[in-house]
Amino acid sequence: MESIQIFFDTIVTRQDLIVERAIEHLYLSFLAIAIAVLISVPLGIYISRKRKMAEFYIGITAVFQTIPSLALFGFLVPILGIGTLTALVALIIYALLPILRNTYTGIIEVDEGIIEAGEGMGMTPRQILLKIQLPLSLPFMMAGIRTATVLTVGVVTLATFVGAGGLGDVIWRGLQSWNNSLVLAGAIPVALMALFFDFVLKLLEKRVTPKGIKS
Amino acid sequence: MITFNNVTKTFEDGTVAVDDISFTVKKGNLVTLIGPSGCGKTTTMKMINKLISITSGTISINGNDISEQESVELRRNIGYVIQRIGLLPHMTIEENVSLVPKLKGWKKADYQKKVDELLDMVGLDPQVYKNRYPLELSGGQQQRIGVIRALAGEPPIILMDEPFSALDPISRQQLQDELKLLQKSINKTIVFVTHDMDEALKIADEIVVMKGGSIQQIATPTELIQNPINEFVRSFIGEDRAKRVTKKREELHASTIMEPLVPEQVTGDVPNLSYHSSLQDVARVMLTKETETIIINGEDGKPIGVISHQRLLQELAGIRAGGAQGGIHSNLF
Ligand SMILES: Nc1ncnc2c1ncn2[C@@H]1O[C@H](COP(=O)(O)OP(=O)(O)OP(=O)(O)O)[C@@H](O)[C@H]1O
Ligand SMILES: [Mg+2]
Image: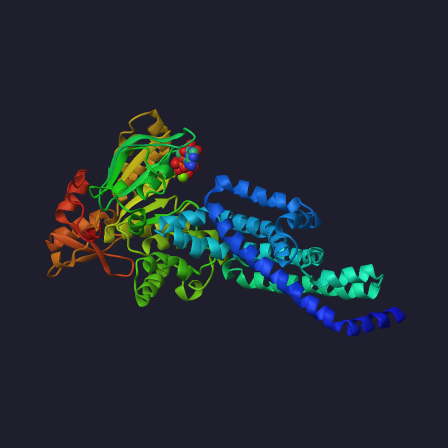
């Protein structure tokens, strides 16, 4: 009982810090995802038209993905120094793969017969992309964005090591001062954010699934 | 008119799918390509709308080489029913069928009317099916939609790749009749791929028999049955079919020999007969009414074609109508 009391006291007394870091956390996550989407979606569309090169591009992003996140931050510090930029670059690199792969797969998995029908009816490549391939691959794309978002919200906790703030800061302070309540006050919001985004984006995924292919 | 001149297709992997073929599809004719699986039927057909490029030789439509034509424009004037149906799953039936009319810039009222008309034609109630999605239809119903989608833009040429393969025998026969009627009444040029000899014999004006990428024989159904050029064609037709179909000649219907209706041509009091009348009936009415032409009515009693004295004589004498093709609806290309 007592520990719960301490936990709530911590939240109240450290309110300002937690709120400020949470906002930073959200800001970093959003920015990273937004930029990753802006890079991956067009790239995914592009490589779906150059299938021979596709595996190569996806391979590169997959290599980045295998680097442990902490190590990736570490590699970037000597190049970019310390600060928000370094954190953002690492986060973006990390978020690329799920979005790129899902965009690409979503587009190339559209049934050949459907594309052929579109071509046969005299649709231009642009019309085929906009009216057939994109609508049909949107659910895949959204699933990729969801995976990337959940991942990013977690990885942002490491941003504190390159001085970019976020809730990782709260957790780290708690760890250094042997203050479990503070650790939890940082960790629980991160978990809640991840769950929340997962839920919201899943709803969105359902919304964008074209009516005719909902099973 | 579609003309193939020494057309060959070699795929990147070296497969020679079509090997130096030449043939002509006359305007207003229905030509079937028939042959065993893998003999190059689909490839031949897809070269007409440039879905597959030609390796050597030329294809021309009404004398214009298709390689000099813009693919998108060309395709909007060639209806295409693909072997795998290929309905767009995220669009309703109405949206699917009205795709080409929309691409061609038709007015909304026009294409909506067209959709209803076509759905009615294939026996699907527009009110029920218009707003459904393809996956909410049975395989056979989807195939009907695939067929009417190709007709919606009123193209003068239609390519059909095994369009009735997923249908039950009754619907298939019904659609074959519809197609034949449609082709004769509005003078469509149709290339029709099938591997079903009965289907080919029933609907074709001419049959192109293929094997291993080359043409074995080009003939009318009757000629094909009577004079198969080699053992392959003979076996492909089959013995009992040959007997069966020869007998059938006496049962020819008015719709099989009628020509497109040109309203100005028909004046005065011309007798009407149903498309299902036998040629004997046609002859009888011509004799008793002392008339040169007879109007043929469709299922709904509306005129859909005419048979002239001359046409009837030609048919009964077994002479092919030469140069009598063409006419209305030919100004689209
Ligand atoms: N893209 C391709 N690359 C290589 N070979 C191909 C390609 N498309 C078709 N072929 C080959 O060309 C030949 C003719 O194929 P096509 O699809 O025209 O046959 P088909 O007569 O339509 O057969 P089916 O009745 O089975 O539909 C086959 O041997 C096929 O394997
Ligand atoms: Mg085929």
